[in-house]
Amino acid sequence: MFVMEVFSGWGSFFQLIGILLIFLFVLVITYFTTRWIAGYQQGMMKNRNVQIVETFRVTNNKFIQIIQVGQKYLVISVCKDTINVLTELTENELTWKPSEEEFQGVKMNETFQDVLNRLKDKIPRK
Image (cartoon, rainbow, N blue to C red; front, side):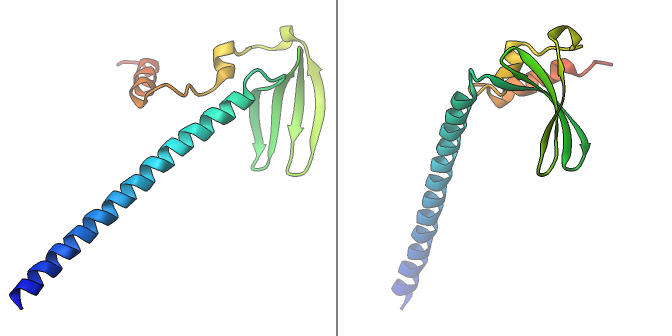
C-alpha cells in the first residue's frame, strides 16, 4: 500500500514536470514565431513609396496624418470609414522631417537593455 502511494506521488511529480516542459516549449516556439513574423512584416514595409511622417489624433477614431508618397507630402484626414486629402505640402513647409533612421521604425536586433539605456539618456538629470 505504501509503495503504491510513493509511485503515485512520483507519477504526479513527473506529470507536472512534463506539463512545465511542454509549456516552456510552446513559449519558445511562440517567441521565435513572433520574431519571425515581425521581421517579415518589417521587410515588407521597407523601401516602400508610402511612409507615414506624423500622426495627430483629433478624436478617438479621427486622425490627421502627414504622409510621404514618393517625393510629395500630403496631409490627410483618416476617419472610421473615409480618408480625405486635405492639402499637399512641400518639403520646405515641414517644420520637422524624420531621418531615414526614424523611418525604419523599431530595430529588430535591439535588446531591451539598449532601449533602457537610450531612454535613460533622454531623461534629464537633477
